[in-house]
Length: 154
Image (cartoon, rainbow, N blue to C red):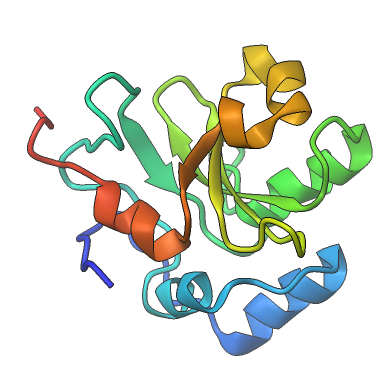
């Protein structure tokens, strides 16, 4: 797995914290993502990176637990709201935010397990109609990390 350096690092997530998240929201985190969070519990890239040259800059990877402040959401907090509003199916787990405050999600359904998608909020209906055509980014969390390009950062 590509080693990407981060700033504003939270303490690594514990197996217990990950299991609580999985149990509360009834999913199994892909192993490569689990290993990442046990080393690196979210954080910002030291230089702004992108997944592709035309995309928005990645702002930060979300941490696992409850929110530590009012302005930084976590995976837990976003899943809580996702469950309440019902707009985004619970098989999509948010983990990374871009500068437009849209999110990257990892899918945990049997059919698309481990695939990463970008959900541009203005095109939610298009995404839900055909996620492969309207949001597919990477076949795995590891592949997503490999695609991060910080060379264009300022």
